[in-house]
Image 1 (spheres, rainbow, N blue to C red):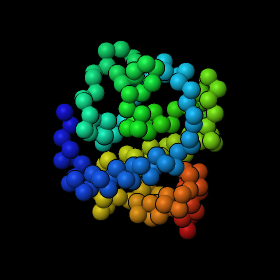
Image 2 (image 1 turned 45 degrees about the vertical axis):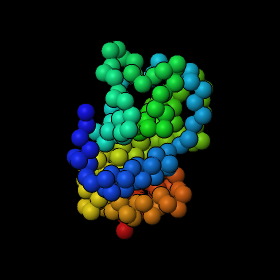
Image 3 (image 1 turned 135 degrees about the horizontal axis):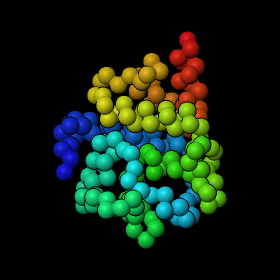
Length: 164
């Protein structure tokens, strides 16, 4: 069982969830047809993402094979709670769907690394001192996100800010 106190107060946890949702909303969308379920295996996720999978839910069963224990009927049983890697599958270079599901746009490896870094930082730092490795604070990034821009636009904006 994960102790939520490691992620801060309830208010801080809710703020982190809102920021995580904003990061996720910047990812390329994809209409999964459910044919790639054999790709669903134990996945890398931050402790915060694992906590969210279990928050108010039954515990995630320990994997007994290379198949994700949350896979039910070839679909994710916790679709809305899935971590970054699961949301990114099929939509980024190196992870494209071999069954023909087409993302809104194909993210680059660099863009995926940026998204992973943002998620990692959200877990690793407090709300007061979150500063990305680009030299752009999380509140500044959130301002970019809240304008409804996708990860590609966010990445470009952060890169331009870094060059100043």
